[in-house]
Length: 405
Image (tube, rainbow, N blue to C red; front, side, top):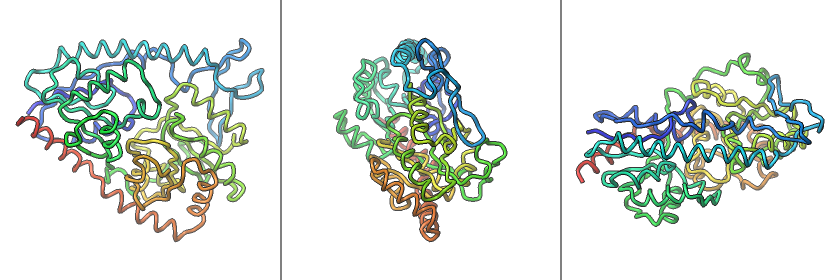
């Protein structure tokens, strides 16, 4: 069996979609993959979201993160961090969007020139839905991890309309949660019986309680502190405002606790808005930015953290809570979208708009040992329910089903 594996852009850093693709792909045997990807222009030439500067009275200011226990902004005449300049952000977004459109055209031509007539066509992301318009729809599978741009961000661009229309033409859709399946059924009017839920999972050989502890000396700012951990982007959907406000209140109850934030900004203006919020709450010495952390180091961060906090407003799955549970770290997450489906009763949940509720949950986890022990035990049991081997087996069965059709 041969599969045209249409996996989009080559990525340097493994995030959720790329991680899912890699973990399942390497566990499928007996299949020859004709991998079709491309090197994106937008990642080479568009300004990175966490490096976009503001313009203040003609004076350009670059925000910089420093180790040693906190974050600060570079000195400037304005005396602090300000909200990003709208013109700067619009221009950065325009450059990125233009290059993405060009990338889409380039990749469309590449896919058409490299697919093979009788192969199964597997498109690995909803971002590639537009390609279904340009290839034979028979024996076509597409992964739709979520509909965040369409449902949550209310994006109605030509690109996303084409993605959704393309997905409706696919023979099968794979998604990662029952929540996402219901969203697809609702917004795409796609047959429920042709949607297969194949969830994210966790590798127990890598994420486990006996993983090598964090080498604190290697990472600035976490040498000796108790810290809350957040893993993810800084887009508004991730709801970091509520987490920062909760930290400001928690400091009065438990002095010395800090927040360690892992991950890139991924959204224009988000980093600067976040830094301004940190300054307004006087948390400059209490929030540590580490940026992207390679997967091999993640278990150490999970193991050393007091608790993982995931306040997301809308998620197709939510991999960090699962990884934290597998490492024996208590989890507090919002009670929205797919997150209750992932965490079950193994973590504490809160209304993502409830700052005081989050403070209460954090205080309980940080002070009540019996509660911590219960959450750790339940989390380990919960994480074992999600297997990459099982997800790979389900994907292979879907390939065989299409091959026979």
